[in-house]
Image (cartoon, rainbow, N blue to C red; front, side):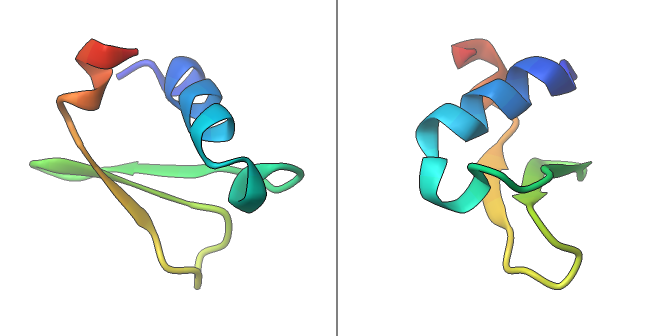
Length: 53
């Protein structure tokens, strides 16, 4: 998983959420969760998003 490319994708697609905040990327078995805070609700993306990037 290319975390740098995924972070750039998320910052471009979700600018209001991740503009000046850190990006926490967690890879699960079938999906990827992305959040800006450990207690925040995650954005859940399919692992297929890596082919789009």
